[in-house]
Each structure stands twice: as structure tokens, then as C-alpha cells.
Amino acid sequence: MAGQVKALAERIIRERAKGNPIIALSTETKMILKGVNPKKWHEFSPDDPPAIAALLQIANEFGVKL
Image (cartoon, rainbow, N blue to C red; front, top):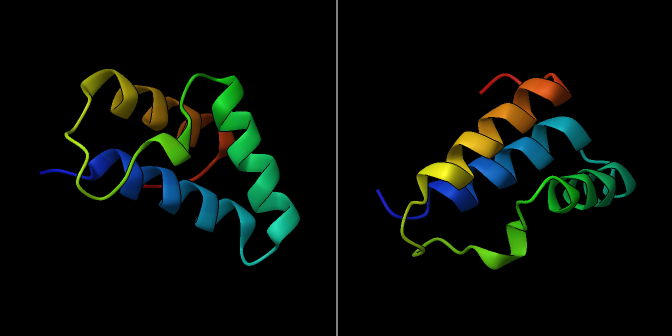
């Protein structure tokens, strides 16, 4: 299923920020520092298992339930 990385990244940002743009930007920055740049992916990007695994770990660290 293409676009899974983008969908996971957006969901993590949305769940953590809860509408606060500063927290959204901070979350995106932390994701980049952890090796996953959400802007690099789009809805037609092929799935990348290492990126998906990294996002699942990031979600766990941030306390976001996926």
C-alpha cells in the first residue's frame, strides 16, 4: 500500500499536536532528527519498511497510539 509512511507521519503529528501548530512543528523537527523527514514522503511514495519501523518507534516514544 503506497503512501503508508506519509500517512503514519501525518497521524503522529496530528495526534501529538492536537491542533497546536507549534507542537506540530516541534514534532516534525524531532522526527527529522530521528531520521524520518515527513516532507520527503507523499501519498504515492512506495512503502519503506525501515522508515515505517522508525515511525512506529517514534510513535511509541511520543506516546501516540497508532
